[in-house]
Amino acid sequence: MDPFHYRDSWDHHSPPAYCSPSRLQSNLWRSSPLTPRNITPPEGKVTLGEEQCAVVKEFKSPYDQARESIDHFKNWHSGAKIKPGSLEDYESNLSMKMSIKEWIRLKDDPNISETDEKFPRYSYNSFTSTLIIQFIPSPVHESITSIFTRGINAAQESLPYPLQARIAAVANQDFDCFGGQYFGSDKTPDLGVLFENAAGDREIKLVLEIGLSETYEELVQDAMMWLEGTHEVSTVVLVKFEETPAYRCPTRNLGDEDFENLGFPGPLELRGSNFHLDDEYGPAIYKGLAWVGRISAAFMEAWKRDPVTGLAVQNGDRIDIHMPTNLPQLQFQLSDFLDVAPENERTISFRWDDFRISLKHSIKELAVSRFRRMIKRRIGLADIRDHDYQPSSQGS
Image (cartoon, rainbow, N blue to C red; front, side, top):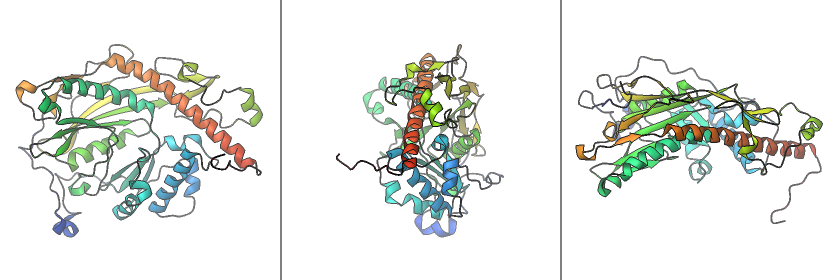
């Protein structure tokens, strides 16, 4: 069965029940949008890099841990303060258990909520009491997001204008439209397709979630939250990339003399063309060092809502998009997730040859990004060792 040619319907199951303000205190944690899953939420864990571990070595509340990690990242990203640590800390997501009370406190911080910065990006699952912070974007994400966006835009532009204007593809937009056991959750999808309903309100209908540092299990939790915690979303597409081996900065153990002998150019002089791909999808090599491992797996799944149980289920087979040739001809209908008249039905298809080319570019762009961050950190370490170092005054 084509994973996208399956229609879910609320005729067989009620949509999620949302709590009104007057019932919030008594019903918030008892209400469930659909038949509750007979599962135990994941055990509490904090996934931290070496640098983040240094921040939370002593006991701190989850709020304090998150706040200090966010502040440290922003200082590192701005160049204001750079401390010794692992370069790849911020490529890995920070995952921790956090109560909804602490999450609300963190989200209400104006330095977090009232900012135009796209990253860090926050995901809070109230059912599992889990906060995930994604610190930096990956060009690999964009290799698939751009393909989906182009396919959706092509179908949209062929529609008559009144309908065309009711559809919007958005990225980096935060959503808090979750009810029942997911009430209080927040999520920013990699891509969302919105549709204006008859009342004039835009609702999210299709969600794309992409994982490189994220685990497959975390992506599945995302699909469950979207499909079981909302009534608007009808389809969630999960895309998982795997890098082998997991990235470790190739210069992390080099002394100053060995580092200088490599003769690296300035960070802005290096381009993707300076890197060599050993195979179709990596590793990316420069100066004999691997800056991106091989993209050893890339697959896609479509998830829908079961019309009987109301639970999120994988729809159709997993699709391997890692093959260098004979890439799948994936397509779906506009009516798979939007309520459109037969005369406005459109087929949404994707140019997988473009994806293969885009992924190659993205691997090299990721290598460049990692190289530049390595240089930035190396300069910062030198400044820390130089006790006479003073940052230049502003405006000098």
